[in-house]
Image (cartoon, rainbow, N blue to C red; front, side, top):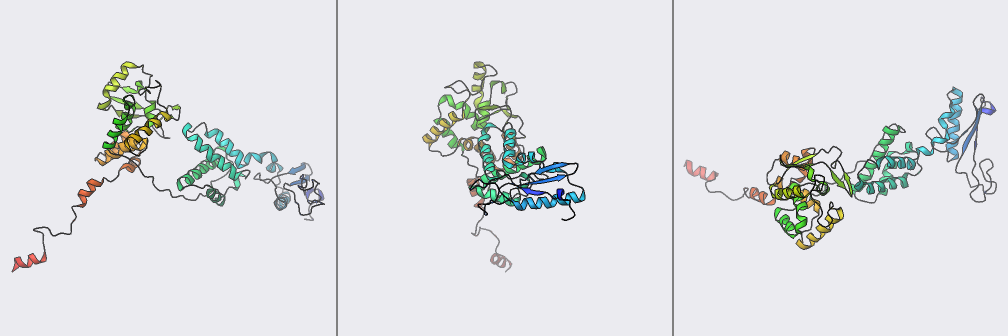
Length: 401
C-alpha cells in the first residue's frame, strides 16, 4: 500500500469502551484487559477536496461489528480510491437502522394492519412478532435461504402453521422488494407439504335433530345457513334490503369479521353472491319485510335486537351439541354439509360451486365425499361366484359333442 499518500490510507477506530473496566481502547485493545475487543468500529479517512469521512457501515448498511469486517471494507475503499470510484455517500450511516429487519417489519405491519380483516390480525401480529424476535437487527439483504430454514425450525408447530409463517415472511420480503426496493430478489424458500384438511360434515337427519333442538327465535338464522350454505359471518351481516322479493333472490355482499362489518365477502377476488329464496324461509322473509326497515338486520338476535355476535352463535351451538350429542362445529354442520350433501345427491359440480360462491370448481371438489352406501351397491356387482348361464369351457365342449 506504499503508493497511497499517508492521508489516504485510512484508519480503523472505535468509540467503544472496555466492557469490564470502562477504559478507552488503545490500538483497538484495552490496556487492562487485552482479550476484550470492541463491538463497533468505524473507518476514518481523509481525501483532498472531499474532506474527512467517518464510515460506520458497508454499502449494504451492515454495521462494522468486527475488526475483520472493518479491515475488509477498508481494503475495498482503498481499491475504489485507486480506481477513482470512491463515493462516501454509499457508506452513509443514517440508513443502517432503516434496513434492519425488525424496523422494516414494523413498517410492514403498519401497512398490512390496515388491509387485512380484523379476525386475521391477531395471528398476523403474532407472526410479525416472531419474525422480529428471530431476525432482529439483521440487515434485510442478509436474509438467505439458510436463515429462513433456521427461522422455520423455531416454529414449533404443525406443517400448516409453519407454512403460514413462511408465507407471511415471503409476503414481507416481496413487499421489501416491490414497494421499498431495498432488495433485488427473493431468496429461495423451502417447500412445505401440508396435508389436505379433512372436511367434516353431517347428513340431513343430524341437521334436522339440531334444528329441532334450537329455540324458536334462533331457528331462522340457522335455517339460512343450513339451507343456503352461507358462512356464519355472511348470515349475521344480511339485511332486509338484500332481499329482492320480486325476483326471489338474496344478495350476499358483506360479512362480519369478528365484530367488524365488512362491505365485501371473504376472499381477495370475492364477488357478491346471488342465492335463490328457499321455500322453507319464504314465510319468515315475508314477515320480516313487514317488521323492519330496509336497513334492518334480516336475522336479528331476539335477545338483543342487533346482529348475532360470534360469541352468541358459539354459545347457542355449544348447547345444541350437548343436547343432540352431535360433535361437529358450526361451519362443518352448515357450509360443509350443504355442499357435501348436494354433491353426494348427484348435483352438478358447477351448480354447487355457484351456490357456494366459489371462484373455481376446484374449490368445490373438496366436498365431493364418497357416499358409502351408494359405493356398497356398486361394489356388490363384482363377484367370484359362477352366474347361471355364464360361459365356461366345459359348457362349450358339451355343446359341441
